[in-house]
Length: 408
Image 1: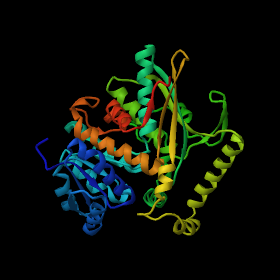
Image 2: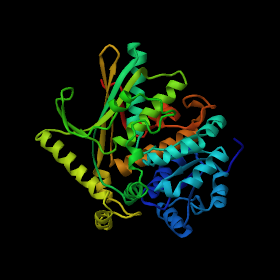
Image 3: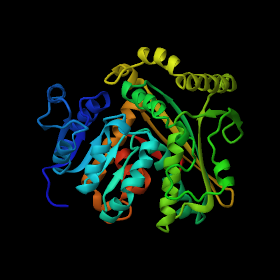
Image 4: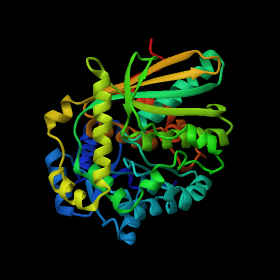
């Protein structure tokens, strides 16, 4: 890559999550001598964010639909970090330019139908050029993908066995921001739900057997988990995270770095604590099913949408600071032995954790590109595990996140 003016450009920097990426870079990236700039469509808002944070960085302006203006920005940087969603609406020109200019890219999307379009359009060219295009680098889907990767590799290296399956159990508290909700509503408007129900939507090929497909369907009902001795429920982010993990597994298989047997399986759940764990599991599952049903009815959706946070809005500082998440990962080796791990952090997952995940992903690309998995030649529409791997895990540990795999 020829010398460029910036190491990282933060696109969408005036949005709710975008502002937090500016704060994060002001605190951490400057200390590592990263050359960075902020970008978006509104100069006045961007300058207000810059002044509020108190940093001296360049402001670059381009509407997401203006390909020529986007090209000017992308051609000046080695890495683009985008928080401008819904990505199916605002991310196409940016992704296209990153592939053409061989600029690495990360974002916080959870819109798997859009990721599928990126794979179909750009994977081959990005792979040929060694350009890493890595969507889903927020809470969607770093804990799931990185946790699975780390526990599988531990089983292979410590037990000298292939991994049969990994199950992740989530607990979290925090708030939603308007951008995340806007992306979810856009999926309904674009009728992306049918695609999202495909267990192997993001896999390189569609040669899975019907039995594999059925075995990997998303759970619909709560159940008692004897492994944990408590109740678990379907996790609303699983239709995103599981597809990313399965893509990682398939890509590693292509590169002769397999996770395990051909029938390696991954699934995830919401974990409930006593007292009344069973009642909580049933209540949450029922409530979420009713909400999803309501959102599929345009009349009901029009009533619900105005009372929810709008793009640019989100939870209070107190809510974000008091939030937290944990992802407990259980891997089963081919001989039945189990290995447990844990990823957890303070700060609500949709904002604080997401910002840490995506910023450290961008910094991994900017500062440690030669240490990333696959070497300098690896490229394509990748996942956090296949594109960033242990480098990201170590950066997150240094940033204060608990990543204990295996769990002692």
